[in-house]
Image (cartoon, rainbow, N blue to C red):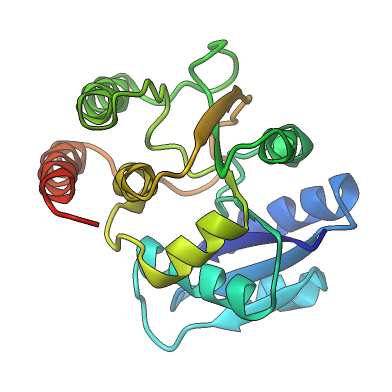
Length: 230
């Protein structure tokens, strides 16, 4: 089976080298695609010099959704069977990839790596956990399914999910919204416990008052998506 890891990167020059080295050591048999989303630092150079996989440099910043969809379009065009989504900040442990892929072999179309099932590793800030809990309840109401970590960007997708997300993928803060997209299109969603790490350098793009904006926007987007047809 052809497998591809897609990693959107925006100004992660201090983290992405460590991420790519970890992937190279842990799963050297999986192809890697890094999408540099218009970084203004040396992220692109670090990625190219690492020698790990392909690197696409977008001419402008599209945001996380646009960068991820670029990866899904690449995967669809090149006929990949499995896509693994990872972030470029070092929070996702590549040792968990095979566990997620095993869920796809057992019938899932989309597998989410959740930090909250066992409560091990970095659990995010208190404010963000409140927001995540709220989004969890909204998605549970809309889909009728418990997804403990709806904002997790650590995921594995099969060919059906790849085709869907290459065609339709939310743009701003896509993780919770894409679950609704998947559910509305009858994809089977499963979760497994993973251990996440705190980013070593830089800071998240969502923090402080941005967390409140994020929660409101995502809630509205989920409800609007739920009321529209496929």
